[in-house]
Picture 1: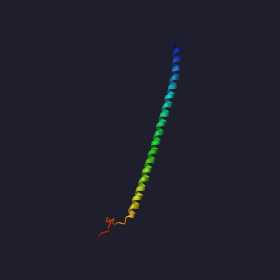
Picture 2: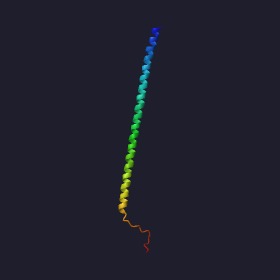
Picture 3: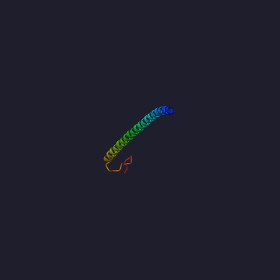
Picture 4: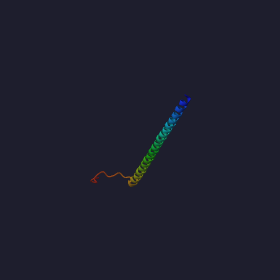
Length: 83
């Protein structure tokens, strides 16, 4: 009887070790995928922020150019130049 129990335990131990190894491999793959996805999302967010910053600098430069091109007078809205 004890020989039968020890054979069952040893076989079950092998199955349990195999199941544990598969579980660890699955968890490692899952976590690696999550970390990779998070890194990709951070990279995409940084690119979006850099693009937004570049656009903001361009708008500031355009505003400075527009301000320098105005001489302070009101434009003449009369097409026929009447007094």
